[in-house]
Length: 383
Ligand code: NZQ
Ligand code: ZN
Image 1 (cartoon, rainbow, N blue to C red):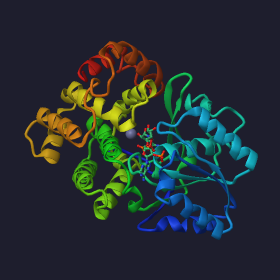
Image 2 (image 1 turned 45 degrees about the horizontal axis):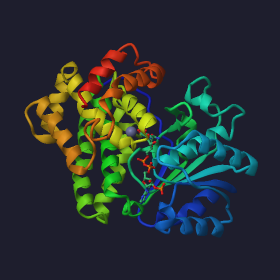
Image 3 (image 1 turned 60 degrees about the vertical axis):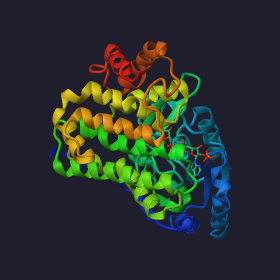
Image 4 (image 1 turned 120 degrees about the vertical axis):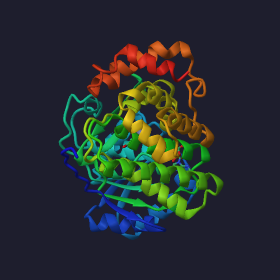
């Protein structure tokens, strides 16, 4: 077991109808006025928008709206939110939606307390020293943003998709009602499943110290995500399946599955963020294209973990069979598993590899291992 620090201050309120508590939760935390951040249309279609407003009004919480966050949230809209938060002098962010809405809410929380442009924090030119408190109601389980200190934003002018991470942007409280996810489309559910699996296996496969406790936690989350996804695709209103899936997705990136591992890196995310930035594909779809290719490329560098994965998750004897089984499963649930599936031309491989190298690889300190040529080798395996 490797040394670690674990910190997670987010309070989770989980269960049916819990979103109606939001006004009281904010009042109990001394909040008087929020910026209410949401996406395109889903929260209005499911009646959640009205319920949130009623709960805020009943508890005397003032609110200003910032709707229209797009999937793969963009910097220009984030900057608009920061202006609003400053002008209206809100004292908290309330983000209601999927990972994109939560992430934009977190970036606004940072920008609203800063005199410099928020993008400087994404380039890590500046450390985050202050942020408004963030509260969330989650409507799409996938990213773990509801219980972590990360936010990912795309600068649409420079075509960079980058992240910030800070203890200051862990949500104070996140409300998780699995019923709110009943309407998530099959397509997005598949991407969500890939994302949750990715968050756990990135460190599992790249660890140099790999304790059994962590390995088993990861395998449990992966198996739970797969099992519940098959039920959800059959019956989108299966409450228990939605509930287990939702909590599994939260646990996948709230820090718990990383404790005790040494050496882990988010290399598939590093490549996937470039696909997201260049082609605006859903995050989970970028990952399902990259993961099987990267696994094939990397398997002999940590053979023990790959053989173990095949056996524990699929009851198969070899790493190679495990990789094929995961790829088949991604495909079965409707996620793309090649550049071609994602409608990305093979002639773009050079451009993508250079993009990865010059953005996330350098920022995350992975450029020594993942050179342009190595990234190209991986991408050729995704054809
Ligand atoms: O915009 P609306 O109308 O809300 O529609 C959304 C969107 O079209 C819809 N949706 C959400 N809840 C729904 C619903 N549709 C029906 N019923 C509901 N209950 O689903 C679509 C996708 O939503 P989005 O928020 O984009 O999906 P997701 O939660 O997968 O978030 C993806 C973003 O999070 C980032 C990704 O890179 C991407 O930008 N990530 C954030 C991380 C974090 N903060 O820790 C880590 C991840 O690795 C990831 O990078
Ligand atoms: Zn992810």
